[in-house]
Length: 149
Ligand code: FES
Image (cartoon, rainbow, N blue to C red; front, side):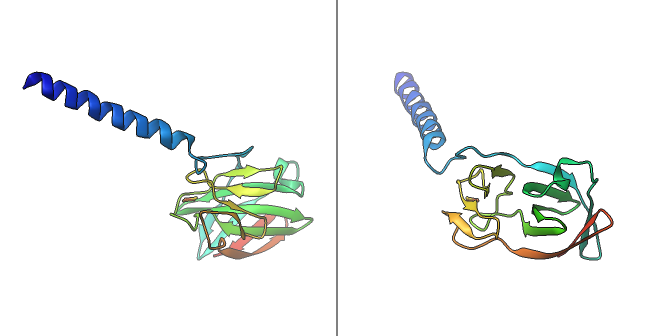
């Protein structure tokens, strides 16, 4: 009886370990050349997130994407050009993971949970997500990026 229990236990561990390894190699795992986004701190007040962007910071250059963390959430920001910024929720529309990576080669935000990708307009570039990221209105002046939630 004890021998049977040991065999069953070994079989169980084998199945658990195999499934873990398989999940690491599926095409839906984090992928591509995505790297962690530059992270900035934002401050939320009355439904408005304010981010100070130092003119000497990396994010002051256009063509840079970043993540803005504030007390109750995170946003994805793309500095399009000059004073133009696009802001999106960082919550993936697939299953709600926080998107925190960016593939600069393809200019896509990448969800590390199952590999969904979103272009710089928030549209799905690769599933499994099927809905675009919610976009928020932005305004920039005096080194302040203001995002209205
Ligand atoms: S939560 Fe599944 S791809 Fe983002």
